[in-house]
Amino acid sequence: MKEIDGKICTRCIYDEQVPSIEFDENGVCNYCRMIDELVEQYQTGKPGGESRIQEIVEQIKKDGKGKKYDCVIGVSGGTDSSYMVYWAIQQGLRPLAVHYDNTWNTSIATENIRKVLGKLNVDLYTHVIDNKESDDIFKAFFTAGVPEIEASTDLALAETMYRAASKHKVKYVLEGHSFLAEGITPLGKNYFDGKYIKSIHKQFGKRPMKTYPLMTFSKFLKWTLFQQIKKIRPLWYIKYSKEEAKAFLEKEFDWEYYGGHHLENRMTSFFHSIYCPQKFGIDYRNNTLSASVRAGIMPRKEAIEEYYHKSPYIEEELLQYFKKRLSLSDSEYEQIMNKEPRYWYEFPTYKKRFERLRPLFYMLMKADLVPHSFYMKYCFPADKNSK
Image (cartoon, rainbow, N blue to C red; front, side):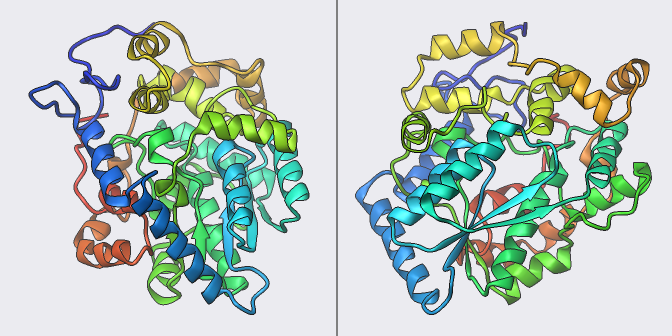
C-alpha cells in the first residue's frame, strides 16, 4: 500500500513523486495540460481530427498503389493494436501485421493475434528472437539493476516494423497508441535507445546478440531521414475508447482480455506488476488510471483508491516463471532486487546526440517521420533528480 504524501493533481491522480511535475494555481498538473494541448493540436475526436486522418488515409492509399501492402501495423495481441488492424481494414487500407516475438508471449496474446488477423485475412510478418538470446538480454538488464528491463522489446518491435516496411517498400507504419486512453509516461522515466541496450548487454550479458534486431543510430536515420518511413498514430486523431474497443473485439473476434494494461506478455507483466513497483517504487498504473479519470470513465476518488490502496495484479506463478527462465535462484533474485537501483544516465546512450540534433528531429516530427512523444522525450534534457 502506497502512502499519499504531498500534493495530487486536482484533475488526475499524478502526485509529487512524478518526475518533472508542476501544478498551476488550480492544482492541475502540467501533464494534464499537455494532454489538452495534444487534443487541440490533433483535434482528437473532433471533425478536424477525423478530417485530417482521412486525408492521411487517402495519401497512404495513393502512395501504396500497385503494392501488396500500403502500411504496416505492429501487433501484440493487446487491445489497441488489435483494434488498429480492424480500423485500418475499415478504412480500405491493406496492412501487413508485424510482430516481434521475444518468446515471453502469453497463450492468450498469441491466440488473439491469430483470431483477429485470421478473420480479417491480414498477413503476418514475425521476427522471432532466439529464446536463450532473449533471456540473456533480459537478465543483463535485471543484473544491471536499471528499470528498463523491457526496453529491448520496445526497440526491437520498432526496428522490426521498419525492416518489414523497407522490405515491402511501404512508407507508413501505423501505431496503435492513444494518449487519451494510455496517458503520457512522465518525462525522465524509462529512457532507452540502441546504444543503451548494447552497453548494458556488453557489460552484463553472456551471449552474443545475433538474432536480436538492434536499432542503432545509423539505422534509425536510415529508416526516418533517408527512406522516410512515416509513423502515424491514428488514435491520436479519432474518437477512441479502450473499453468500447475491448468489448467490440470480444464480440467480433472472440478476443480475450489478459488481465490488465500491457499484461499480454509475461516479461511486460513482470515489469509492470513486480519489478518497477517493488524495486523502484514506480507504479505505471497511474498513467492509465489518470487517463480514465480525465476521460470521465472512472471517478477520481475510485482511481485514487485503486492506485494507493490496491496492489498491481500479479499473474499466478509469474515470479517463479521469471526466475526459472533466467536461471535465478531465490537468493540471487533477492540480492539483485535489494541492490541500489541504477539509472540510464549512468551508462552510454545516444541521449546527448539526440539533444544536439534537436532541430533535425523537430523537422522529422513535423513530417510525421518520428512521433511527437519521441521528440519531447529524447530531444530535451531530462530531470535526472527525478526517478
